[in-house]
Image (cartoon, rainbow, N blue to C red):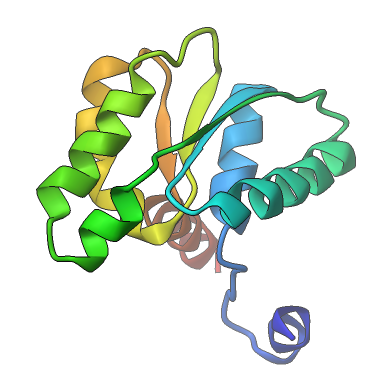
Length: 138
């Protein structure tokens, strides 16, 4: 459906994770995916593999599930949500980039950036940067 919209419109239209996945692969193939919902890890891994294969990038993935973070956010405890994600990221090493796999995780990015040495990517931030580039070119 998104591909059909992309073909019909003259303005840029992105898939939800497109810009983040592209940006991650620009850093390299050693990536960490952090998620708060188990199914996201599988879907994000598959999507990332498609992008990597198309770009001939070999992937070495680390995946982490922040158990309880989604529930904390659903209960209105955003600070606990963020702290669970940040704590989980402490053991991420030897990666080219860290991907926070869900839009709701973007709020934890500043805290994760303080404890990992690799760039930390989110879908919203990556999409805004890509759209700015695309619009500047047109």
